[in-house]
Amino acid sequence: MSATPSTRLHSIDALRGLVILFMLLDHVRETFYLHMQVSDPMDVSQTDPALFFSRTLAHLCAPVFILLTGLSAFLYGEKQQGKAAVSSFLFKRGLFLVVLEFTLVNFAWTFQLPPSVIYLQVIWAIGLSMLALSALIWLPRALLIGLGVVLVAGITCSMACISRSGRRCMCLGRCCMIGAGSKRGRGCGCVRPIRCCHGSG
Image (tube, rainbow, N blue to C red; front, side):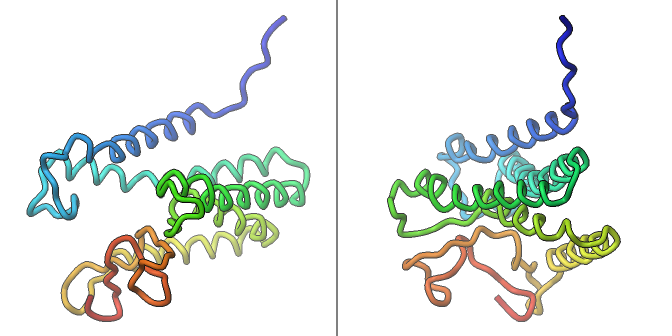
């Protein structure tokens, strides 16, 4: 009796595994660099090259995870007979990830229940993306392509812009948090300082 051949794309699994290794490397870097404390591992003026490049690699993790989420959603949709089933699956999976971020993941970060600070990170972003996809799949393909181009171009321009003071814009790509200890706005801020393109930091 022959085994049923696998329909998984090993290239996707290999890429996901490689990115997980990059993520593990970044998450354990402080263990190996306790003797070399730096305020920002991306500051080349005070960072060892090995630490700088390991941190640079980690910047691939979240974008690739988001990319693979969209690719996997597309491949899943191609195997289904109707958009309703795909939309329902994406909505439930996205809602599960959002709830997971607010509960288990935040408890793992803070060991507080309920936590005094709520971290909204990659799992939360993937969950919201899947919730958005559950609605966006009903749009025409041409409109989806247009929205994708606008999003990619907008984010690329925002990340590359230079503020009036000459410092690099850091509006995007930061992990936001909500909590009483935050000093920006009404209990809402970011883990690291933000400098926006609209003015000086």
